[in-house]
Image (cartoon, rainbow, N blue to C red):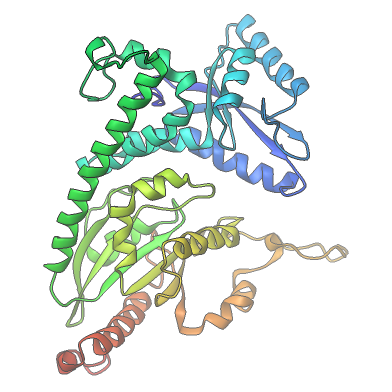
Length: 417
């Protein structure tokens, strides 16, 4: 599928659009647009302007109000007059087919929403046949209800991405079947085929997991770009791709590692994000099975991120949706070297904010209740990594004793080994 993929050689310019609503204040909208800009940057686009509007809720026809849409159109026109072309407009929420069609009619540039942008990034990042199949399935699911807007593009593409029959294959068309109906049928057939492929991949992966022997499974989970792959590389001495971009890891990487005399499996998984498209969660079921089947979850958190507590909530909700909320887990606060705080002036009587709290003060808040289920590290600077290895050893050993009690004599506590 190439529908949403941005150019990887020429950086396109983008305008971002978000809403301020009773459910989402101005500060929260700014944070969401910051993340949307990071997504755009990851996809290869350069953000040149942001537009926000304070409303009770999104317009069912154009997302923003007519006046705001005209304002965006006028800005695009001025940029074009100055020979600075705006390549696309990206909206922070998922748009319906009706909204996209109406917005395109006014702005006359490429329109993306958060979902299509994330799908775009996933398509760029997918390396293995498994990941590519999962991304393609999510793209088709996204396209199907929006096909009325896209069918002319599909006609130009011929058969689409391996659809098994071109649009010129008149013999495929039933009596009185319209072009739109035929495209819908072809896409449904493609979705069915991709589901069959993923079912086969899932069977293969299930067999692989069964053949891994009696080893405890540990999975690194967390928001995207919190340092999971860097931690994986440190602990397992592997070479998992790690980059300061969103969704650097799509395919689950599993490595056998040993601490002391205790072997176990460590898995690095795809990162979560706010407003993660449901189609992606469904399509990546076989990848997320590593999370479902893990004995221990290491929830990695970027403590230097100003909104890390909401990121924790997003991950916990996603884990709950996957049925993993009750699994044994440990929170690993990463990037302590990048944590920043601002000391309040002596005469400043306003309540302190998160930015006014030192790391040591932060550790004494709700985090103190986590006790041994909480670690503070810097994977980049290798701070407290040995402490992490020690705690991980003890937790894996306890789980091993519970799961395979007859094997306990092989693994004394680390202090005894």
